[in-house]
Image (cartoon, rainbow, N blue to C red):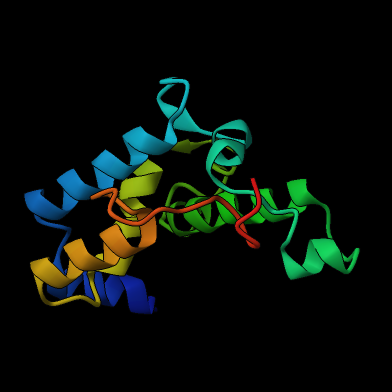
Length: 138
């Protein structure tokens, strides 16, 4: 038989602890702008502006294609799990979001570093003044 690298790591490291799950769930709640219980392309548009993405600017891709690729990053990890191959639907559930961060978490030994990484990615402490998107354009 075969085992994927992620399956191997999961068997050795296990799932995220409660602290990390709480941080990941907090970010999901922030991203779910309309409180629907899923994050979709409309939620992403509220936080991520793809107009200045290099592929959009060069005409290779549309803004929606970039946003869909962003969403698919989260769905991809969940779809790779046995029994979930047909789960791609353009909407990220909390379970899919947590699975993505389970994979990220497996390579981070320290809870404080995980917290720092999540804050740097999502500005959870609100200390940075940020504008969404590639060029800082709103």
